[in-house]
Length: 426
Image 1 (cartoon, rainbow, N blue to C red):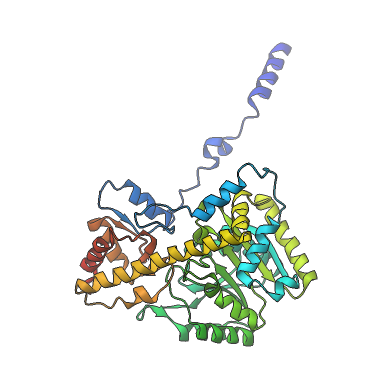
Image 2: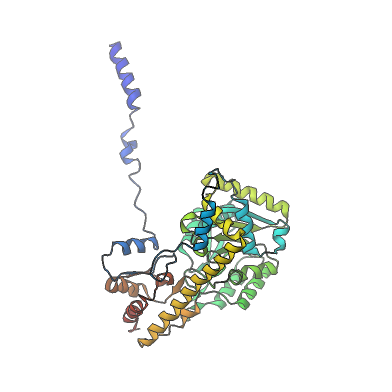
């Protein structure tokens, strides 16, 4: 009998304690349902599954050349050649690469920025623009728990996910004017005025995603003035500096206006679009503070937020960015290449608009060339987009957003004809 009990004890130790039926491993996660497909990434999945030789993907938010192929900039290739074999693989500090951060500050705030000289900017390397936004959202929740964030209607869909998961309450403000397919400036200003004093606002610094609609310089000045009156805090998501107009200084104009007017600001920077470093997750989060002491404190807290998330940021992308921006010749090459990308997008906007007009479309397509950046908010309905996919094998998000990076000289006529077919009855 004793031997039998001993054998049973050994057997239980080997197999572990028996779980009650309600806690069996087979049902522990049984209540978990599949998540909804991402509205953007799902487009690419459907495109890849389509066997049609005529298929066109204008949903992807990544630059393509005129043959529809991914591009690696020559400045990036040269930076990688210089890096190869000359760097170790040690961890970066929690705050990231000091050299990359310094170059990012100069790009966003200006080469001769007084705020950089006075060390008033808390800055950390981030996992591209998404990571920068998430770090800021968590910082906002931790240190201003009663605050909320005002987000433009519409915006990049992930913005809502980021602040939701950081548990920051969200409100929206008017941005896009449906009838004009431009900026709802009156509605925007009205919502800024109505928001409680000291509210947080998410602003797209340039090349608004998904609409491609940006305020003019004069409108930015009016927005900044109203923010000052209301003591609002602007948080800029700058994912397209240089990629929008081809000029990084011009694309940073909104930020510079707010700085000139004496605002404290936050800024998320990304090198995915303007350097093509999509998979390297290279970005930066900056917060302008009252003084150096405050900046040191804020940076230390940002690092503490990052620590349990990912500990420290990746090395390779930071080396590429700092090598390019820190070398005058490579930076000059980058400026040439980023302008080339922007110019191709602008050229495809013109070609698409002219093709639609030549087909005799009864609609106005002026908004295609009035908008800027990677995306064109076409004004097509979800039903019209569904027809494009079903009848013409053209893939885009159902809000009618066209990624101009997917438009080429080889497919622009086909795309225009398809758009004309599904919109001509309007």
